[in-house]
Image (cartoon, rainbow over all chains, first blue to last red; front, side, top):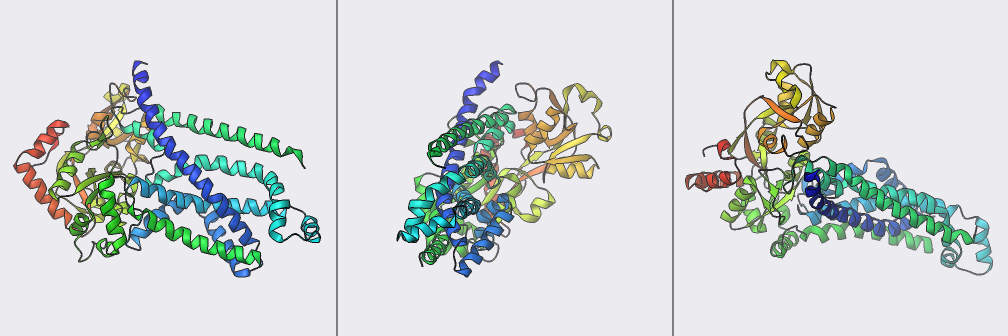
Length: 228
Length: 292
């Protein structure tokens, strides 16, 4: 047990660094995918057919292929096919490529949730708004948006908790997130070699993070309980 | 009307977001400020595209020197490439790579890669060489332009210590379920000896299989086994028995790259003046060193 206590601070430091990268990818994806997803959902509801067809095609491809393959394509395609490795070999490039892949992927999933939220609002509300002389933008932001948010909270919490865990997929292009950091100790890193427990210990980080997010979502749901 | 405008804006955003991210990160680099500047230069000037075409007539060496950094693809692998307490990359391979880059008048930048994707990393131009105790198998030689061998290695069998006495010969291994790293020299050996095996993602994973009892034995590099198995590790219940082959380590470059010739010459020079032996001594691999 003596060695365990010696290893603990080194491992925790390394896992913290890895988890910071995980969190960075999580927040960047969330910040990018929510607005992009909203735009895509408007597009799929558009009366302009070419936009609708293009976006449905995009959603089909993105939701229909594994995120792991999308990461590989986005990171390696520029160098392999276009002969111009825009991302570079460094960690920042790997992060940027991961972020792009995650934003596009999650925006497509989010957009379908948003679309479901928007069409769940009864048409009578649009009509009532129009009778009052409101524009379509006003109707969306003043009448429908908050109701939509309330309705999509449960499916969104599902997706967002999944996102926290999905960030580990970025290790396929060698982004050094928390699982990568944990696994490094299995072969040897910073004087610790052949330690298995750090890999399993990474689960604690995900669990704590998702616990916090679950509390936040519950709170948000309670705050929105004042209307039906 | 508004919906149409939003749709248009969306299309524009999508296109922009792709190009913006693409060019924005071209200048990023894990290395310190100095190299970022040079990276940015080569990234923006447009001649980068041609330079990466190293497989044909263009000089890969010239392109790398022009870029100012030799990007070395590694995995965290004691005693070849690993981090010291300050987070700097050290090890026999790391020190040699730093010295080689210095001989070209540039800096070495170390990047951890997923070992499975090493050929992909090289040919896509994200890294310039694989320098990480890489066994020169036919597969590796076929997909990369490899340097002369510089270090001897062997693939050895790992079993639980209490069963070690039963498995001291190659013949005794039949009937065991092995775990090997996918695409590794260990997998090649398992195939050649007709052993039953499961391919796992890395050598450490193969060891975990044995420790957890999900596989009976593993096949890994002897240099690595020396560092990872035995007293003072989580694998103190494991030990190594039979060596299956002997093999050699080399450095991999892009196909057709002239950096290979530069490195072979560098190896000769540094072996002749004794620097290579000195570095090998530091990391305890002097016995495995190959004369250049």
